[in-house]
Length: 312
Picture 1 (cartoon, rainbow, N blue to C red):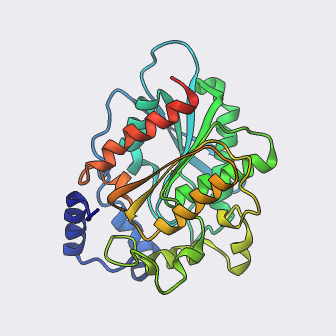
Picture 2 (picture 1 turned 120 degrees about the horizontal axis):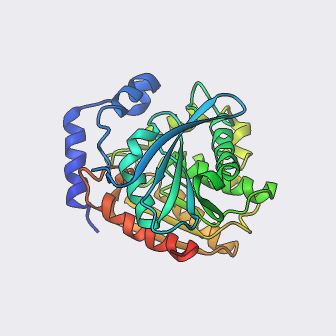
């Protein structure tokens, strides 16, 4: 379908701001802009408790935001360990308060959102390690947090979708944590999908091909990382044995081909996958509820399919 009017209007606002591409801005300037509108996700549900804790990863003290919806009983609840997007370079947990509070309530889950260290100062594997260790911390503290570890999944958007995919692969490979699901929102799982000169949606829809190539360069140490599935999930020799997957792509997203290919690989490997391509949408719309209504309404689809896996 045509570009959704809300997405088109948002892109017009962005164009009027006349900001250079993220690849030109560089990390420091881009981080400043990313702090400009903390309410991009829409209103924060005041009934959901938001608390901040810290855990010590192998390289740093890492903040986590914990979203606890009102309890309906004393029973333990499902859990989600979430990794935010931003190309491994920008964004932070507070920018996701509206999205995570809403999803916690809609799924009756405790959500732990990990403020992993950012590239290029902290390249792979540091952000990945922070995220996997955030999952380990959540499991270790599940009783205190009220989480049923048999109903614990991971999720993330964009670069966070990459990290969630990688953490799910590592959980499978290491065999210590059995995930209930992975929730992938327009993930970027292979740099090869923005390498060619004829990438669909390469420019004009927010995230550009040029910008995504630069973000990959910020995250990876070089060519050798491209063969590491925890950096590049598309590089995994097998995607068999992964948890049920809830996944979307956006129609007008430079990452769409990447996401579609990952979905097809997951299905071919015999995994349970529920997938939706969101018509008329652009990259990042899940975080743009203030401007794009579908960024809010997609939460119902996510919740329905997460609840299908973990129950109410």
